[in-house]
Length: 278
Image (cartoon, rainbow, N blue to C red):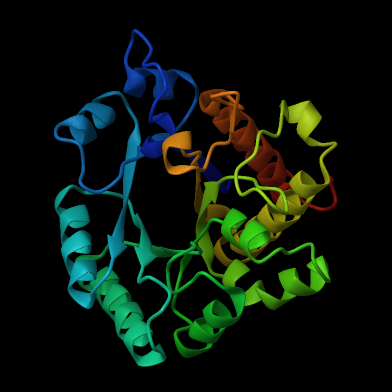
């Protein structure tokens, strides 16, 4: 059977009160399969996570071609499963962006570690048109889809939502990892309520559409042996992702991460069930 693996992104925990048993035990006990650490890796925590039975992946930033090789080598040395990467700043000329992409692809092959470039603001993959153009030049690219950046940043609901989703199909077909974050048309990270409540929100239905199409494409490509990684990434008010109301974050990011994971599992399950049984 194909698997959807859930990872807690380490940045989600910033500013939250650490439970008595510690974060890694709490992550395991909450039913996550692993943890996604951020570069630089916290000393000793990778091994501690593995002792608790958690899988480990990482993330980093590639500002120059040499960064790709360095990050991939570090990931291989730590035996990380994969990395998600912010690549460039978005104002690079095309030839410079191509060099960054080539360095990522070469580093992935050389160090035998999957490197997933992220659909993220302030990177060369910050807009749909340029990203699809890069895919035409480098069809071997594989993505970490953080679609809140595009849904909110490019206002997917202004115009034909379905046409925009169809346009990014080449990206959808190459997405092997997703950061779980849901935004509305004007705010990139919002509280969606409980799993049941989220179903009444139109923007959540849009994300369900995106995530389901990603899972559908992944399962068609990888079949029953496929392993897809989903990591809720809900960032704090310190960097202005979480909204504050009267000086307090509007949501409990720990609980919201679990809701987003449940939504992803529901979407994945629906795509995994044979149509004759659906």
